[in-house]
Length: 195
Image (cartoon, rainbow, N blue to C red; front, top):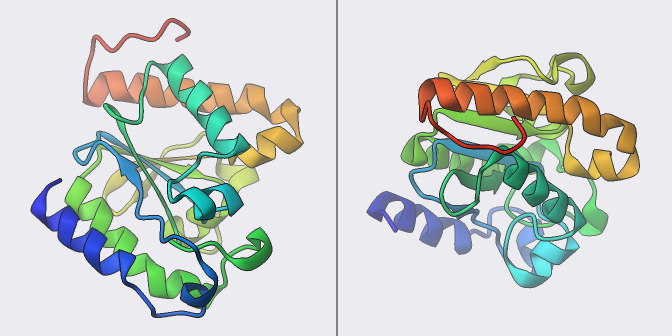
């Protein structure tokens, strides 16, 4: 692991800055290619993630991996996946503004060190904290935004797709735009069997 990322990981794993540190099993640093061209940002770890210590491994993560595979992306090669906050909120509730405020500097630093070309914002919470509180996922999903001087694509969170399968078509259209932008910015010959 690159030295800056290793140092950041050490700091994050020992964080005690908020009450979530008292109820967590694991701090979720994130995982993937440390020089990933695509960074995927979710809301917070869930129960499975907290129990095992890895991001997006439950039902939402399994669906996300299927979407990545359809795009020709893998976590190890193309993606680094992270969250707005690093510890599971009790009952999987939405992170509070205070929790997000404490964790956001970690994410900002992680983005700087990984230096992705494209950021995918999974759902309303990452959109709110990275693009601003007036942004709405239902209005802006599928449109390119600027986040920390990088192109960002807000998409529905995979948990929303599990609750409402009708959102899958829109989400696939959004990910096809990501594949197109990846070909434009990173690898013109990137292969996907589906787009």
